[in-house]
Structure formats: structure tokens, C-alpha cells
Length: 274
Image (cartoon, helix red, strand yellow):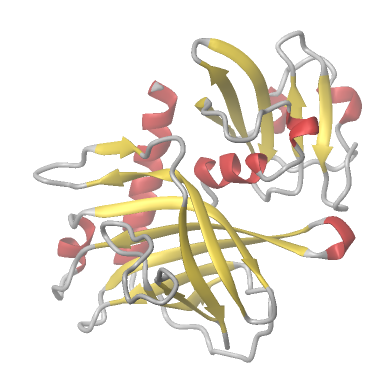
């Protein structure tokens, strides 16, 4: 997992840079579903960022947009960027499943980082499933807690809490390997070779140059113009390697490579297979 921690460190530094840069709000414009791809930021009463949602929109089957998200929340009420950077946080990725301007965010893969006294990230349990109500309106995403029927008891929450209002800031989102895992798990199990509901352990790597991909069969089925950057995910059942996946950074392509080297393009940017 050394590669994971290197990637996590890079991601943390990137998030720190984003949160500390004081991004200028983009002009809000009316927006129907699906939400615009980009980064949305939540701020506390002092105007300091305490949360973000990275949104990637991919054209799925029948041209229905698939919305992949990574949500970070920090527990901080102060007025300095440095304090926000060192606050306890949670990051968890998944997808948004909605109708017209409303729906849910279903989050399944991520980590917590209490930062007391120093960063100590821990991967969330494999079977984590967190669901918030989601509303999209005018380039604003609002997450609200769900309740048990007939009661004002929250059905689920995270610590720090993800609920709040996130306002569109920039088109420059930051896809993560956790988003890639969540995206793979949304694919047809007959294509991924992963059993629904089974825990898998993932090892990851980030491939910054497509020319470094050397899996047998990939070169033959790669489209003429391929994304340059990929997440490499190896799914293990215990210590047994089950499948390897290559997920393009824009999430428009997913390759599955079996341990015997058999490769297949299981999702492409036309919303199809192969």
C-alpha cells in the first residue's frame, strides 16, 4: 500500500493548495440536472472552506449522465486557512443518483483523517455506505441528512458531517482513486468479475503516461486517441488477485485485465462496452 499513501499525500497537498488559494466564486447560472462538472466548495460562517465536492460527469448508457463524486468535509469553525487545513476530516467517494434537480448521493469508498496531532489517515471499512439527500440548483449542491420514516432521527451521518451547501467554484476538479473504485463497482458485475456485496481489498497506482501501460492485449483494443492518465486498481480477495482495472482519469474508459492477462474494455466514452 506504499503507493496508496504516496497518492494520498499528493492528494492531501493538492487539496491544501485548493483550500488555501481562496478560489473566486464563478458566476452562478441556472443549471438543471446533471450538475456541472467541477469543484464545489462549502464554507463556514467566517468564509473559510470546510468542504468540497469534486464532480465528474460521464455519458452513460442511453445518454443518461453518470455523476461520480468525491466529497470532503472538515470539522472547523475558525477563521484561518491554516486551521481548516489541520482540522479533522473525512473523504468519501461514490455517485449521485437523482431525478430532476433532486436525489441522493451514495458514498462507498474513502478515508478519515483526524489530524490530532498529525495526519493519521485510515481507510474506511470496505462495506461503508453513506447516503445523503442531494439537491442541485443554480450550480449549488445541497446535501441534507436522511431520516427514518416518521422520526426526526438521522438515519446516517459522517464525522465530520458532510451536510451543507456547496457552491460551484471551478471546472478544475480533482478525481481520486476512491472515485475510480466507486465507478468500477457501479459497472455490470458480469463485466467486472466482482461479486456484488463482497469485500475486496484494493491496491492502487497512478499512471501519468499511457505509454507506460504494458498489459497484454491493451494496446490492441485501446482507441486511437486515448486519455493519457489512468488509475490502476488491483482488486484482491484476501491475498488472491481477482482483477486489475485501468480507469482513465476522466472516467470515460475502464479496462479489465484478468490475472491471466486477458484484457477487455468494459466501459467507453460512448456509454458502451468494448
